[in-house]
Image 1 (cartoon, rainbow, N blue to C red):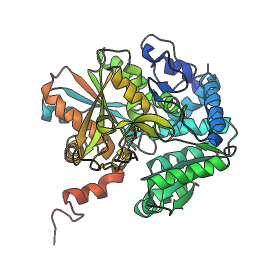
Image 2 (image 1 turned 180 degrees about the vertical axis):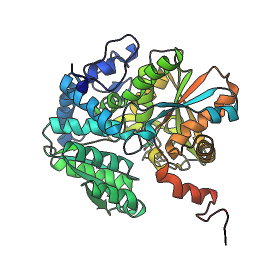
Image 3 (image 1 turned 30 degrees about the horizontal axis):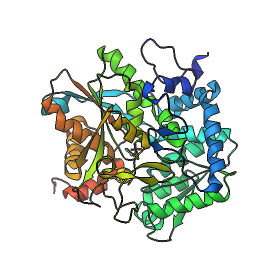
Image 4 (image 1 turned 180 degrees about the horizontal axis):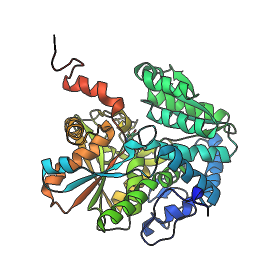
Length: 434
Ligand SMILES: *Cc1c(COP(=O)(O)O)cnc(C)c1O
């Protein structure tokens, strides 16, 4: 194979380089999943859809199943990750931070260095390539704070597709820079003014447009959530993160990290970071949810802790619910973690005893955000700062030989105004010469 089409991702030690997404994903799948079909993870997952969408979603699943085994598809996906996203992303050893804390050494997988500044581009490019392969004209999705919308609009421009992003009118007003970004990238932004005019209404609106013309659109889901095949497909696209980090850590240290730690909203960066390690029982895998401002309903978005079995967005999973069984109010300092559900595979991974879930609150997250900025010169996304806060919490209890690999899912440029306001930092100078 000419070097220009070689896969971007290093591989598990000793194994031949994967030629397809299926081969790459097989490196990352625990035998515990061998029996699963139709996107089911134990009692969770599935595809619970209104009748008009059953057939279109089955077509997406069939197209994905084909694409997974297609060498050209994987070569093109890998090429774009390399040439556009800038993969592989490095691992940075956070030595000044680790020295200050004492205890375990903290390492950072730098998804913040990706083009567009976060991990989301890893799967939106995959979704865009699948849409193109299926002969679709338009990628459609909802977005809350605009992160998924920007990543999708970028991927659409890259592969030459139209993009339509539905957004609550309240969010459009709040997220002006991302709205402008999406429009500059050529996407059509639709402001949804019905109901509360936020994310929930945007989901319904995008879904209605999709259901009316599934021939034209691919509904591109932004995490490992929604109906099958999305939890599998988005995981497989994101699994490049863990494949890389596993090979990088092995090459640099001759062994695996003691733990991999990632924040969990819907769960895509976490499952991508974990997948390659599922069979390495000596590696602890820790998902960190937004503990927000407290344990009362509405003050957090800790679905793994407080969710109850339910149905949301076409899947069976844990859902934060109010007394009437409706999806409950959520809060997090990080808008990307504000989701009342969670990817069904996470629920299953905890049942299998393979992944632990913790939570970190807004205050610890702000502290982690500031500490990393000062000690390492890296301003993390508030989402990623949840994982970091947990590493900071446990590092002092462990020995220096233990490596805690934190998935730094994104950069914090988007968060600086909000953080400055939270901590009372003004845009004034510190000193004046007059
Ligand atoms: C969107 C986002 C998340 C949360 O999404 P997951 O699917 O849980 O990964 C985390 N970090 C960043 C930087 C994000 O933009």
